[in-house]
Amino acid sequence: MKKGFLTLFLTLLTLVFTTAHAGALDALKKFLADTRSFQAEFSQSVQGPNSRAAQVSKGKMAIQKPGKFRWEITQPYVQFIVGDGKKIWLHDPELEQVTLKDMDQALGATPAALLMGTGDDVLRQFDLMESGKAESLDWVEARPKKGADTSFEKIRLGFDAAGKLEKMELFDNFGQTTRLQFFKQQQNPRLASTLFVFTPPPGADVIGE
Image (cartoon, rainbow, N blue to C red):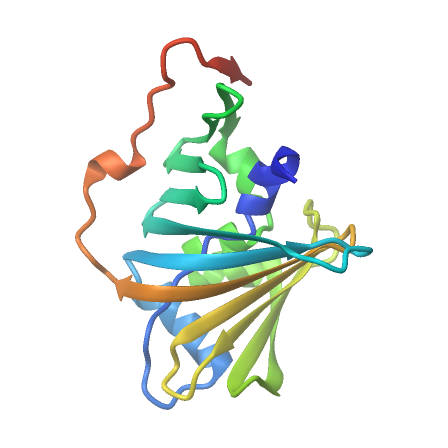
């Protein structure tokens, strides 16, 4: 499951914000316009097409526009990804391995691009639509536009009655589903610049330089 972590991460960058009495699509649009930074804790479950039990993990994340982010798994293993605005670094301490990718090429039509872009960027890459009500949440669905270079079929985001993003569901083209729930969310906090700086540890095998 760790093997595809970088691809999976690009589905996991998300944030929570509030907007009074707005629908799910309005809330997403408001985020694109208003959010400069975000941090939260999360729980995540990943389930394959033939799996009865989901793999569950926990962690924390931070976003700083434009283009900087940190996604950190803390349980049941440690693994994190840092985006410094130009490069994306995936560090697996257990394997003593660092994977390096160019940010522009790695993001593409992914949820990361959806949530960190401008309104115009999102409309160029995704078709957005309201997706009804379930689990006491209003849902919006984003599908990559036809011909987009992406491994994801669709992304669903669930907002509560106050317009706060509570859950996110990610469906890839291989039948795998990732579900996230967010806690202790902060919109537009002041974040330390060191969160988005990464230096490979001594002895780590760096792939992709």
